Image 1 (tube, each protein chain N blue to C red):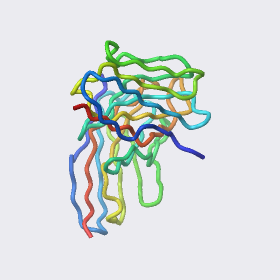
Image 2: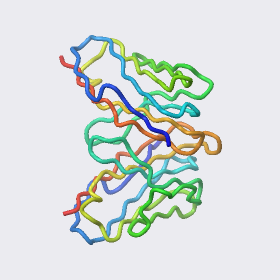
Image 3: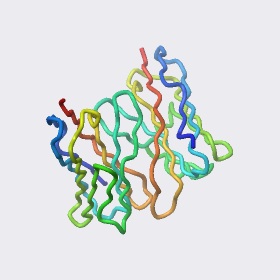
Length: 111
Length: 116
């Protein structure tokens, strides 16, 4: 059974810092991996989708990498801003057997 | 383009009462999901539809939960009777691919249920 973990559970950084969020999964036979952002009381907003043939994706200040063989993905946020404060979740797609989500990392960026 | 639409956003009911949630996916998305999210946790799948067919309902508590997706578009999730432990956020999502891998997943705002 696929299990997804995210470290750290919570992170607080001053504005302007670069930071890395980690996602690990136990079964490396995945198809896609997707990173989401969730604001309090809201649904999940898609940030980046890394397809099976890709190793990384970039969108603005965000860069996500995927290493399937080691069961790891990282989300890099450059020059963090207070507006980046949210919970970040990763989810892995087990070849169409549905996405399995991690518990999330709660990020606070202090002005 | 409209995103995934869910209603109601909030619902407060007494235990043993019924409740229903509605979801309209992104136009053209053939795959629809219902997830349950407890506080501080990631979403957990309840049921997945491909068009009208429920292809994975293994995690749906069938004694009290039911779902339908008539005509392969919008969907309804029902709980009857509700229990205190059902208090959670019910999220609907949709994607445009099926088969070996799913496409990008898009979520609605969720329906927050409180059972008193």
